[in-house]
Image (cartoon, rainbow, N blue to C red; front, side):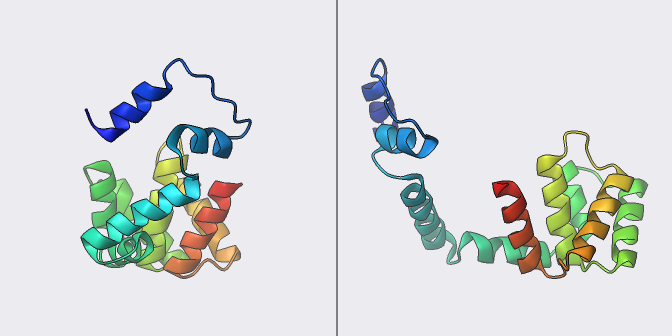
Length: 145
């Protein structure tokens, strides 16, 4: 039996007293959420030689938005090509477009509606989100809100 299963088995039937998510996580796992994330980052860095952020930046910069959409959706349609062209015409660079596409994929329950994604792209430009790093910071801020 793995350590995870043993740990899980150990807490079945026990009362968890933590009042916050962080307290409950620490009570169950014995470490804080931040410590758990740091350990995951260390394992990832040992395996790949780069941090999560470095890996993600490399990923979004090394792919065209059309290829990125194909990887996200499994196919690429003419609508996808039109969407990418519109975002490029707005002035977004390919890396930022890829971050935007990831963001929409994660948060949108209705999918890649052209008008919605274009509106989000315009909003990012208005907020001076013009680099991959600033796009990542913007997404993190939005996610935390």
